[in-house]
Image (cartoon, rainbow, N blue to C red; front, side, top):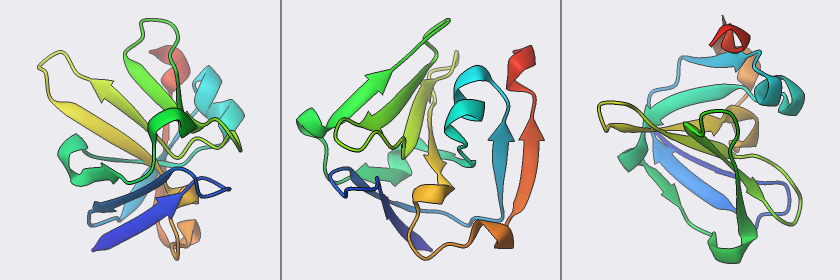
Length: 115
């Protein structure tokens, strides 16, 4: 299924194809603060349609994940990582996906604080 999403102001928009059945609630320091529910997808399936100067990046710790956010409204619609084997994943914040009710998905807790 094709999903579309955006930040709050709409300056950062994205779309991706996936079969969503669940999402992850991570308790690491940044995910817990932003309240994101994340679904992992292959990076090549993510299309960021609006970006440029509107898209900011935040990394911390070992800089393994680039947390992307809108510089205007501050919302974090997705993140990206580079795994050790070179495969890239994207993590879409399903709270930013249009016409998707997160309560219809299974939510899995991930202990990101322990990583």
